[in-house]
Image 1 (cartoon, helix red, strand yellow):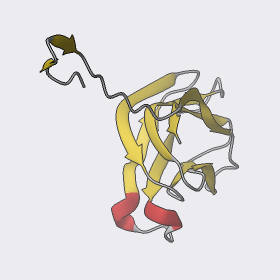
Image 2 (cartoon, rainbow, N blue to C red):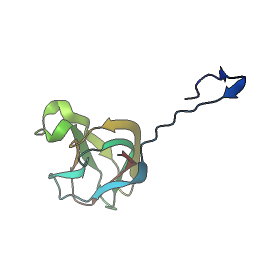
Image 3 (tube, helix red, strand yellow):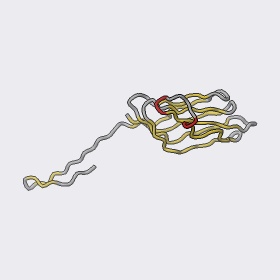
Image 4 (cartoon, rainbow, N blue to C red):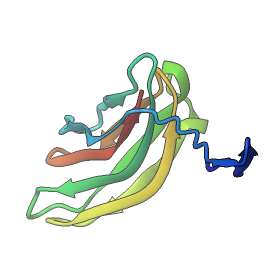
Length: 130
C-alpha cells in the first residue's frame, strides 16, 4: 500500500508500508490410498494458512473405471457428510482429473481422499503462508 505524499519543511516524503508474509509454493501432499480407504493427504501445519490451488487425481489402472471422494475437514474434525467437495466422482481408466479450486485452509484443516478402487493417486498443490 502506498501512502500519500506529505509536505514537511518544503520536502516531499513518500512512505510505503509493506507487510509481507512468507509464502511457500509446493506439493502439499500426495497419497495412493487402498481401495475404499479414506486417507489424510494433507494437514495444515500449526500457525499456517494454506491455499490449495489444484488437486490432481490419476487412475493408474488400464482396465478399470472407478470413483473417488475428496473432503475438507475443518480443524481436524471427524469426517462428516458436509465435508465432501467430491463424492463418488467418476474417473476413467488411465486418466487424470485436475480440480483447480483455490480452497483456503486454516491451521489443522485436513484434506482427505478415498479411492473407489486401487491404483488411484492424489496430489495436492498450493501455497503455505506462515
